[in-house]
Length: 133
Ligand SMILES: [Zn+2]
Ligand SMILES: [Zn+2]
Image (tube, rainbow, N blue to C red; front, side, top):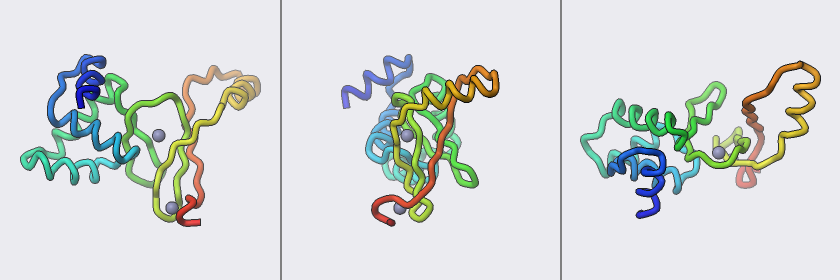
């Protein structure tokens, strides 16, 4: 709990109860949609509106504490910022998992072939998770 206060302070944000709850839920669930986040957070903060939740999430994204995980043809999920990683998506249960793979060589090859200077990569691999397979 104290640690989460610290995380917020390090990002120059006031440690409000809502923000602490958002961090806790992201720690617990890993990747979570706004709808699910809202559902859980409503249990604790009955008067919280979806608009306020969005506002808080956007503030946390703004200071790079939270990252949006865009999923094609689906709603985004949100996670706490970690070291750069890619994502696995289960096409059956829609679960999102992290995968830490080194994209250095792929980026190098892309830059060589395209003469682009790559600044960002988004890689989403789809398949069946161990539970569904
Ligand atoms: Zn699955
Ligand atoms: Zn992730």
